[in-house]
Image 1: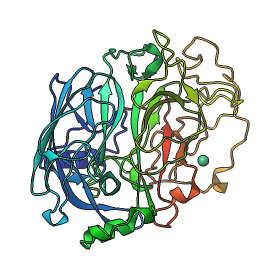
Image 2 (image 1 turned 30 degrees about the vertical axis):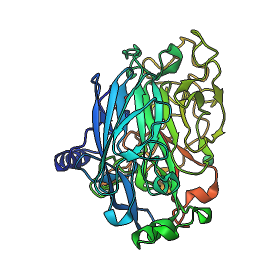
Image 3 (image 1 turned 180 degrees about the vertical axis):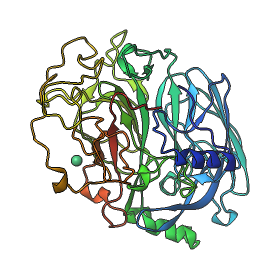
Length: 449
Ligand SMILES: [Cu+2]
C-alpha cells in the first residue's frame, strides 16, 4: 500500500467531502505525496498562510506547499521507495518584505544542491522568488525529517518542517489470518513487520513570535525568550487532530492523527521530533517497541534484525530525531476474553470470532472463554456517551438510544496517546488541547483501510 493521498486542489477536497458523508474513512496509511517511481520529483513552494488552533485562534505560519497549493503545516509528507533518485525543487514565495531566504535540509541524506544562493547549511532560494534544487538518493529505508536550513530557530518555529518516508524494498504480502490486513516491512527484515502505519510529527510554537512576524517585527524576535504555548501532532492539536484528513475547514492542516488497528496487528508509529523541544510521549495500551532511530535499525548487525530495540512506557526523542516504533495490543492477561463473547454476555464464549481463539503463534489464547467479570448496569442506569457502543466487548455494538448514530461506529476500544508533560495537554492554556490523541482498537471484522 504505497498510495498516499495525492492532493491537487479543489477536486480532491470535494472527493474527501463526499467521503465524509459516508463516514470518516479509517486510515491505515500515512497521508502525503507518494511517488513510487525511480526518479520522483517534488515541487515545493514556501508560502505564508494561517492555521487555526483549538482555542479559536488564527496563527500566521510559514510552510511548504505542494506546487500551486496552499502552504501546509507540516509540509507535504514525501513518500518514496528505497533506491529512488529524489529531486526537490524549492521556490521561495514568502512575502518579500520579510527578507527571508529559505532552504531545505534532509538529515541522513547526502544532498547535492544546485541553483539558488549560498547559505550557511545549504544553498537557499532567495527572498525575491528564488529557486533551488536538491537531489539525493534515498538509499536507506525509514522515517526522516526535512526542515529549513536557513535561520532554523525562527523558520522551524514558523512551520518550515515536514516528513520524508522511504519505503523498504521488502515486499508486502497478505497476512494469512482471517480478518487481518496486509503485512508491510519498515526495514528489510521480518522483525520490522507492520499492518498499519501512522505519522507522529511533534511540534510546538510560541504565539508571540508569530504575532511579531505578522507585525513585521522579525528584527526584534529574540529566541532566548521562547515560550511555547501550543503543541501539535501532524500540525493539529486535540481535538482537531481527531477530524479526518483533508477536511475543508482545516485547509492548511491536512493531516490528522487517529491510529486504528485490530488486536494482534502491529502498528508502525513514525515519530519525528520536528520542533525545538523534547516531548515525553506516552502510549497507553502497550509499551511501544522502538526498532529504529534516525532511519537506522537498532541492530547488532548482520541478519539480527532490531535486536537492540527497546520498550519504554514514556519515550521522548530529541529535536531533529526520528524513530520507528511497533505497538501491538493482544488483550493478554486481562483475565477475561475480549473477543469470544456476544455483546452483553456474562457466559463463557458462546460466539467465538473465528481465527481469534488462538494467538498468531497458534497458542491457545490464555483468557479465551473467560467471562467478562462485571455485570453491566441496567440500561436505565446508563448515561449513553457518544463514544460508547453500549457494550464492554471489543466490537460489540450494543444498543444506542433511538436516533443516535453513535460516533464509535466500530464499537472499538480507545486508548489515549499523549504527552506526559501536563502543560502540553493545553492549547494556549485551554484544556483539553495540545498533543493528545486516541488509538482505536477495532473489532477484527471492522475494516481498516
Ligand atoms: Cu496517560
